Amino acid sequence: MKKSLMFFLIFSLIVALSIAGCESGVEEDAAEEVAEEEVEETVTADEDSYPSKPIEFVVPFGAGGGSDRWARAIASPAMDYMDGQPLRVTNRPGGDAAVGTKYMLDQDPDGYTFMISSSTPIIASMLEDTGYHYEDMICFTTNRNVPTIILADPDGPYTTWEDLIGAIEASPGEVTIGGTGGLRGNVEHMLYQLGLETKINHVPYDSTGEAVTDFLGGHIDLAAVTPGTGAPVVEAGNAVAVMYTTDGELLEDIFEGVPNTDDLGLRPFGLLGFLAISADVPEEKIQYLSDALEELFEDEGFLGLQGLTGEALYHISYPESHQFYLEYAEELAIIVELLD
Image (cartoon, rainbow, N blue to C red; front, side):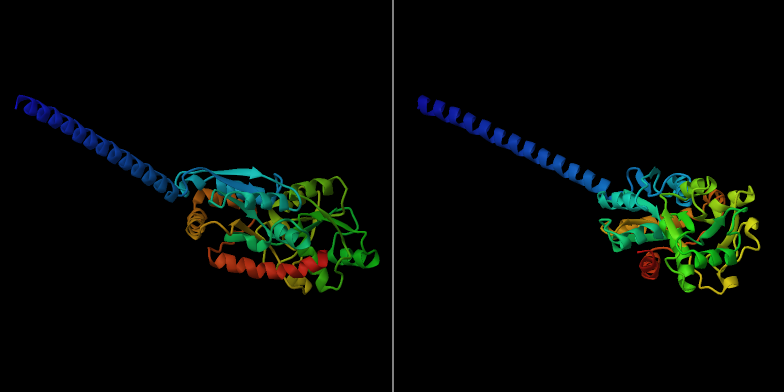
């Protein structure tokens, strides 16, 4: 009887210890599951909190040109409209803006890389194999629609539109004009309307600033520039404005009296400026950026900096901006046929 009682007590102790061990294991497993759920919730929260880190703002042109100035004006107050995250401007010029565009499109489509753009990389993709198509990009806001101004040497033979057209007719291919693809394309659009397409010698540059430098050095006859870039050169007496490729009035008094397309009986065509991102970026992030830029474009600090570009703000929000972009690209196809 005593042995049976002893055996029972020992067995009861073993069972009790086993149950305690099982309960401990269950508690540990439960604790691990809770910890894993908390980590998953944290990761999900970080992914949903956009933006949660700095955004790379690519300029596919060299420093000093119109797009570069616009990008820096936009980036300056951006933290106030991007949940405290900065836009970090990086210049990635080359290949008529194709290098920077391809770089932007090659990054993870997570919304943390976008670029300021123009018609130049669109034209480049139509002229050659750049590794991307213009429909690979989403235009989530526009910022400018400006003319090309043709600059000429004030002491040279092309100081008026009539002189320039006469020279092109007399010596096809001899007159040289330099600039980025979009700006030169607008000039070609004017010549096309006169039946003089492909009669001017185009010299491509990765930035408007580089084109102006070569123009001032006498390496090219003409420079295709934006109003903001051309105004100080004309004001300094180093160039004369021959014409500009839209029909509206320019902000700069220095261009008063310069003929526009309406004066010359031509159809206007400007350079579209816009902010682009990969078409693979989630829709909600694209809309977030468009909404943020809409607010930013009303910021007094930005408007002060933007005014220094010498160009008016031309703003269309997403998704209307993207539809406008696609229609504009179709119009560019006409220019591409001329430049090809």
